[in-house]
Image 1 (spheres, rainbow, N blue to C red):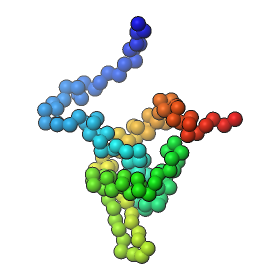
Image 2 (tube, rainbow, N blue to C red):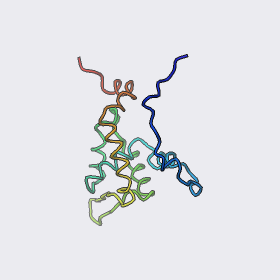
Image 3 (cartoon, rainbow, N blue to C red):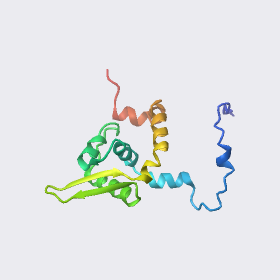
Image 4 (spheres, one colour):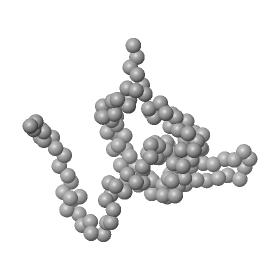
Length: 144
């Protein structure tokens, strides 16, 4: 039987492992997955970190890096609606014709940015492309 090398095992933060969780009913990792579930929510928040944006600009920002699958208007609307319902983005509709709607981050979303920045920092190592190699290769075949 092959032995798994464990010399570089992650050592959990002792503060986190000894924390009193008696008042918490849902695992924070599961909760984060439920809040951010969906292909585009984190990307939408990342886009809005640069400042308020309109619907079309958000949709265009999601074209790059999505494994070649552009977001549909129905999915974008759903993701934006869920983020708004969870208090992570603010939707401001202006009383003009044609309709103008602008989205921006709430303080609740800004509080999550250290997490999001760490995810992006990890992604800059390319580790995610190694893990998802088959999907990345299918969407972006090597040239030549």
